[in-house]
Image (spheres, rainbow, N blue to C red):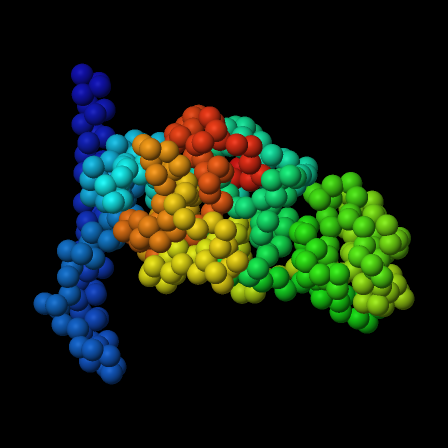
Length: 419
């Protein structure tokens, strides 16, 4: 009997709460119906009258924002409609894994998709992850990277140098710049309230002795002997030797401690500046220096950045600028990886199998069209080919060329937010 009373009371409380929410919504809708015509009549914008105002749509939008149950139901419906012939699995609240096969010229392509409603998955964070916490010169399987970060989803990330594992292109994690951009390639920025994509360049400098020295890159291969590079402890124990007529400056706690034309030890609490003597000797006057690192565009508030290339979707339209980003070598039909987001800031991760009879892979244009078809308003290509591998809930879900996937430099992971 007590249980029945308790359940009845709970039911009544729930009904009262629902009534309160609906009354609030009705109040907002009513106010909108009164104020919108007044506002429209007092301005030069188009007239809006009460009969034209769709209160049903507004109510649905408000409920979708304030009710997790309604949002989850809408997300379930969206995914079923978007991927009608796919095998759909719930990973966790707000996260779906979709397996499907498409046909191009009558030949099959296996595709794995993970779509995330970030408002439903509030306890999860999407971020890049390195294969090692201490060095860039490392490679591990995606399973190991995921396990080390307690990730429920992982997809291979940006390009890297196969011999060492050093990422090739912009990589920022938790507002720390690990590697700088190359060839002005496109990158994705991760913010607290959404995402952005743009072709990224570095805007960095070292200031000291009344001089400002432009920094050309961070922990990346030297393109020209005239370039000024920064090597941080993640690069390794020693910097590369300075170029001809060059010098390396060891900086500890914003003070230049040592200058040498040979490889210089990289201090744990500092970095090494490497470049032409004619440029860097000017900093030795007072030996106090300050390193400033920004990007163009200047993404204020950005937490993470990962580069890729080329663009797949730009401003809601298919856009593939392979030649402009010096990526001619990745054309043709291949395994592919991509990341994008929708107008609702749902994140979409994609892995396409290829180079086999049961899945022939995609061209970049086919991948771009696919990303567009599933609602991406922005998307970029990631490292592909033998690197393409996706991990969901403890296992690799696609079929990479090497079982389990080749060892990777970095990945994009979805994991619990660290408190």
